[in-house]
Image (cartoon, rainbow, N blue to C red; front, side, top):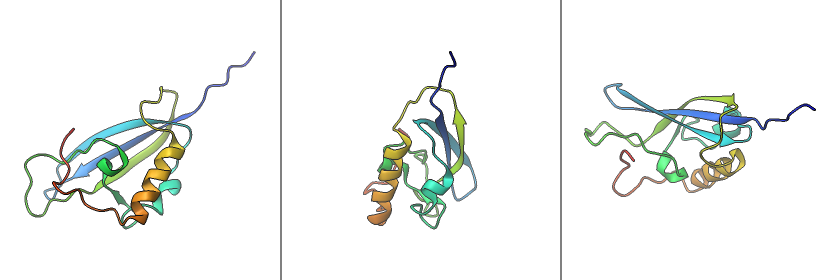
Length: 113
């Protein structure tokens, strides 16, 4: 009997500050997700604010006036690792809701955690 393993998706993302320093993180989503599924909901087709969709914010405590809260998706790839976050469908719905709301900024800005 052949086992059927559900394909999950690893979403890798980063924060790049004004000096081009980078911080990375990832989540494992249950189900299949591609960049095309999210692209139309991203800020300028590239950026998002992770705290607004339940993901960990990577913005460092030390910031200057050129820094921002926008993060970038680095990669979406299939994985057999166990999911540790939402389903792909739930994440798409969260991105869509924030897109419709205009991706509002957080009052105090996001921080590690």
